[in-house]
Image (tube, rainbow, N blue to C red; front, side):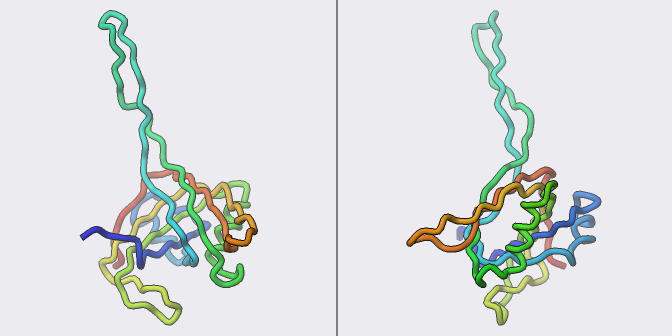
Length: 166
């Protein structure tokens, strides 16, 4: 059965792990803040350029795998609590910071919903971590059909780390 993103949680931290591995992210785990009002998630991963190499003698151009580049992605949030969501406040603070460094934690939560309506993480749930730069927090245009919120730009700068909730 295909998997969707319902019950998936996004957390943000202004801390960067000392090492880009499960132990490094575990060391900063207490600094992550849940982001509410998500309309999408940042995309993690690596894309490679494709370089064309001409060989005049053969009369062909060959494609070779080029340099790796971590992904850039834009995701959207809506303000669930009249602009007071701590996770969204932290997103904006990080994006406005000159360095913009941050870490993300995404949990595919399988637990029951808590009093706040969000699912809880259970032992064994998949956790994906990534670090990078938040460069934009662009508030949505006010129109008769828009919601308060923002578009957020994230640029990954280390390979993502996948683990499980202990």
